[in-house]
Length: 194
Length: 96
Image (cartoon, rainbow over all chains, first blue to last red; front, side, top):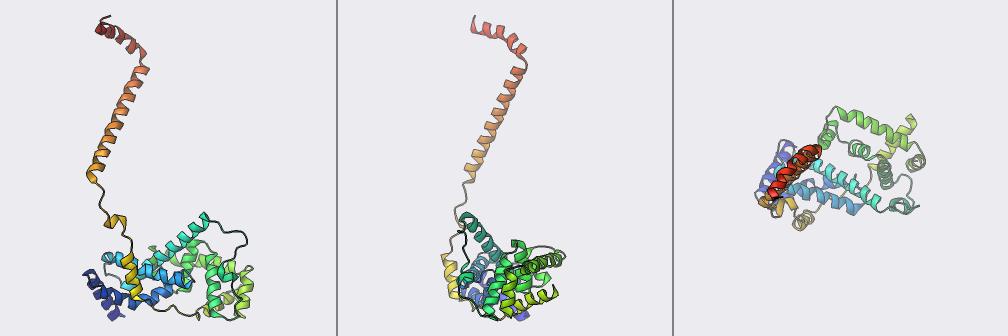
């Protein structure tokens, strides 16, 4: 891991010196992990890819501000969280500006019925369940529950004290459990894992 | 509740088997970087500072004058006797 961190630092320096190939190497090294991370913010494939590209575009624009005292992947993860959260907020804002007609179902829910035990349907359902939570709880659980980030990583990405994170995650998990215990979520989960 | 917790955890475990995101193509990212619209604060011409400074100074001066005149008017209104006592001077000045 230290070798990879050293390679990242070297490529950052080379990119800042004008070597664009070095930035391509950074994209190749971290692209898939960031892409996977952004799927936690949108289950739509093209949106997930676009968000992942946004992360690297933002990283390129702000590369001079990377001080190198933490691994490059941590810095990138922070940008990813920022980009993902910004996407949610803009989406919410758009929803408020253009209200959806009554009885409208999101495409995933309106699509073909999934089979029990289908991992894609499970991921979609978990994503939809989290989306029904308040934004801050959703963000915390996306990081802690879906992406399995540690307390330190969450604190670093959200810019909050480490001491605050476990309590907030605990409270958010309680909300998730309460929500998932109600219909229609409860029935859907039972059916999917049956 | 305990039974339900395991349901949620089982859902999470099932979701973990969903297909992973493919690698990102560096070419696509580079195209996005090239096509990126410049940030106004970074790449546009800086605002004409002298003009802004001049306008600020003029606005501050105008505000001072307004304050001064309103204070003067308030004093005159508050003390009508002083206004009346000044009338003969004004009349003599006008040659009445």
